[in-house]
Length: 223
Ligand code: ADP
Ligand code: ADP
Ligand code: ZN
Image (cartoon, rainbow, N blue to C red):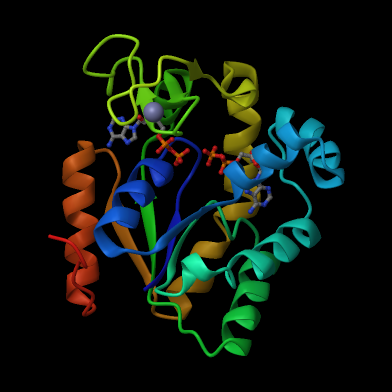
């Protein structure tokens, strides 16, 4: 299965793609996570990306297209992948089509998670993740079952992203509206776009995505 999850920052792409990764046995590819790893490693890409990410702007298409071109050929993508955070511009979408065409792989669907802007701000400001395993949480909507302990790995250290501050969120939403939203008509014209209500509870969003996938002939690998 080759799937794209599209939506503004805070829409639930990371949350849902992690759930889908397990259920469908495919790799989750988060370009945000990949870039944050480059920043942490202090690599040339990371050094270039850091100030751009901190400002809530988009890193260059060249860098992202090169990163994805390499990433989708790794062994964990043998059964497919879910793209979370890529493509984010029309040139990225066009480059992805070219990459997939060269590999004779067909994109199954693009799922847009629709969420109102006020809710996005609330979601982003309350977001934190486990430092050890990356599981996502929220101050109000998804606290760990045991305070201060990760449900998945038992880790006790959590991190908040520097770009999840209120000041930067606005710039990120603007970048989404100006540069990423124009991808929607691109995929609609291909007949691949499916819209899912991202305002619902996490489990309901998951069920709705599964219903879309079933309808196009893709059942989960694990029930
Ligand atoms: P979000 O959770 O807000 O959707 P991500 O973790 O996907 O954010 O991305 C964080 C930041 O990384 C973005 O604001 C942007 O600076 C950079 N980034 C991630 N993916 C891309 C991409 N495909 N193109 C350009 N920049 C990207
Ligand atoms: P994205 O990857 O699109 O930026 P995330 O999956 O990181 O978004 O979700 C943003 C925040 O909102 C996280 O703290 C997450 O726990 C929370 N969240 C995700 N989906 C929902 C939902 N359906 N209802 C309430 N909160 C949610
Ligand atoms: Zn954990």
